[in-house]
Length: 352
Ligand code: AHG
Ligand code: MN
Ligand code: MN
Image (cartoon, rainbow, N blue to C red):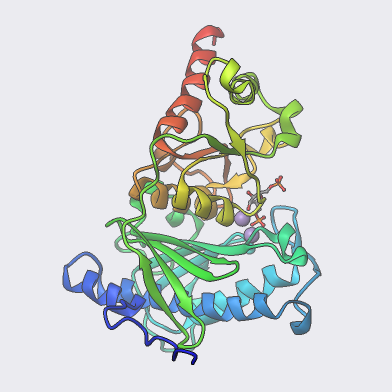
């Protein structure tokens, strides 16, 4: 005889309960709790759109481009609109900025007349991993929360230019075989899985910890000939395996969705890198500091890992531009330190 489906564990902790407990513990404000709940709700909506795939008419190009000169997919635009609409009227934000928008938007330009204005700034990459949308591989949403500077009522782009250490929350949602929200409010990194029947996120890993050592790296090796010397030497030594100076064999994974690659690293360790290369050197790197590198660095550091540009701690970089790009190395602490060592040794040997 078949067994009845088990009831949800009575001890299951919903995202709402987790956030209320953080608020009661004095670690987050009521407004930040509301903000995270609203972002999570928007991610559920995006998850449904992603999941419909061809049946929802959401695949393919939008026929438009963003300020960074990238062609937009339909889902880039849909996800951006969902996040804008969800956050416009809650009263928790002073403004928001997106990888897909030319400039930040003060909330007064988005909310219905008379809506209250909050004290937080929200930044997001609405759809990360766009090249994977049409081939049914995991994509995600990344977000970062800053405080609006005191006395600023209508924030402009310059008010978002705060280092990653100023973040009060960061997270991502991965739309994969399951939809998961991974979140930090500065008190550890925690994973929540979407219960699709109930429609809510449930805490499934409290206190993610990245192993300090790893034998796995993630990098787009097709760019190898464009890399700079320290990166050439670093990856060369990883590829040399047991016979090389690192004395062990490494495995490689590259999904080309940062969310998916970082999720693997938060789960089982590894190092993720998108270094400077000759193709992106004029822009300072490929990945965006404010929408990708900083929120992921906050999550990784809160899970015991490290995040660097190769020469400086990522979260201490002072941003100069909303859409600024940076080289990225993040993941298992010892391996990120090893990658940094290759850069330091190179710089020490080359006269300035
Ligand atoms: P986005 O889709 O938001 O533009 O980001 C794509 C990023 C990141 O997710 C991924 O790690 C990287 O671009 C992949 O780059 P390559 O296609 O050069 O490998
Ligand atoms: Mn991205
Ligand atoms: Mn994107």
